[in-house]
Image (cartoon, rainbow over all chains, first blue to last red; front, top):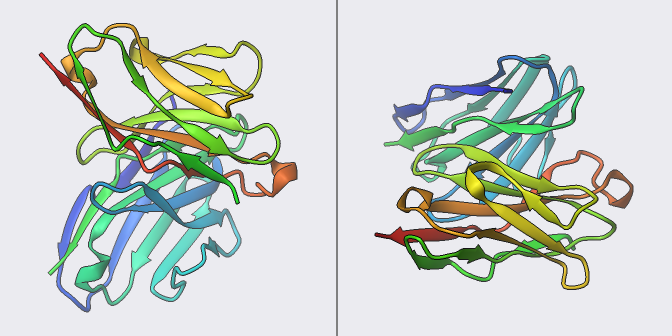
Length: 115
Length: 118
């Protein structure tokens, strides 16, 4: 079956530093990838949608200069949290949509803790 | 506005008993409906989906869901619950392209925690 990986699975960083999270579709090509944020005991909140080779579309209220998204290839999208603050601590989940089947597959998530 | 509602924050069931996790939706057009399960500190795992056809959809791990268009519901069910079914369950809907779902992203309910006791 289709697999989406995320790296790292868990990261702890100091306030003010930047963190990059990678999302890869391992056995399919994804023209579209989605980035979600999940707070404890809450649902997934769509942050942005990235299309390969073009700029990401951010949801209302999400700072595009803080959450930099790059989707340079059909199998890789990255989310960089710049100048991280403790309030950015969260569980970040990516999802990739197979360009052929249009099915959407989820990564295992990345737990970010900003101290 | 497009939305998905899961009215129960938590559902408690004894092992071996049937379980139901409720979901209703408010979406224009004929949406695609999904159920996902999430274990602690893990991503989402796909359980099943409804696109068209038979209203009763069978999915992974013995789960099934029934699409009811008149009630705009898509409740998740299992005839006999297992302790290992304890997890967080999310209902989701994909808005059709011709009703504003240009990106095809999923809209999620807030999730229901299922607790199955031995």
